[in-house]
Length: 382
Ligand code: NAD
Image (cartoon, rainbow, N blue to C red):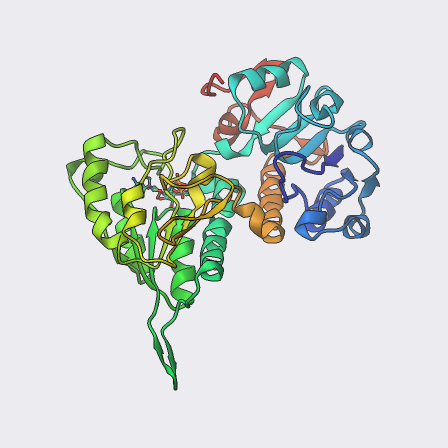
């Protein structure tokens, strides 16, 4: 089976879906591999490393996709009129496409018409067996780390208490909002840098996890929040009344913070607004807010998605998009391993290709199309 690894073309994406390490492993399974020239460059993997791993370097996307049976991507391939080249039209019928495709029902119908067997990895069920293929977790983990490092870079003081002959600089107060995968890594990173760290979340289980990392818990709890977690481990959408009470509790706390990192998401919805304009106005000049949720609309009312801004009262708000892409080397390495684990889990040694069993829970979760039909039950319409 021929594997194609493409250069990402959407929205300044810096990551790549296969690294020289994972290419080598795919070749060991009996595949051949074509890597489009420059595919790994923005992640620190130049063509020469793929060639050393045994891949053919394809001069363009068409050459990379010729005869491909498996296409590895970070983001969805470009379709008609979406950019410099129609990547979808170049994918051979019957090829398996694996990426974070963020597909709507309409997009899945296009894949089906083109005979592409599409799998969207962000739909993976969060079950123990799938942990090593969980692209959302691997990427969120790095995003949480990177957010704190960038906050430290933008902050004009320091995280630890600094005692010098010229006087003492106090430790930074750091508040992490949302303590899922990204938030827990942000807590751990801010603690390692010496900050005084507190955190909040709505899921009851998060409270103990926050404390176990040495941070203090700040938050509002009531009967509603006791049931705030879905069976899949995600936060539920809660009532306007709950969010108002939560805001009341955190407002006074935010006014005393030097750094706020927001990571809160509610699956399938716009991210909840947790930091209002009034809360930002209450913060000291020089404070930094990092909004990792900016791709989902942001947790901070004043966030400008994709940009770093400074408010009239001197608070910096970093609303960059694609936080994993800001640490692209490591993010690509983990993403590529996630995909490799997914493929090897379903690898048929005799056929030398993955055989995606439709009754498997993981396949049910990620597979969008099979045999020219849309098979996924719950895709958004548009
Ligand atoms: P996520 O990215 O969907 O959300 C980030 C965090 O924001 C969550 O902790 C959520 O509770 C929180 N949040 C939502 N609304 C909030 C609000 N109003 N105020 C404060 N916080 C709010 O979540 P995630 O990081 O993907 O992880 C969610 C859960 O799933 C965690 O418990 C995690 O450990 C679990 N998980 C399990 C597996 C597995 O078993 N395979 C894999 C990954 C994650």
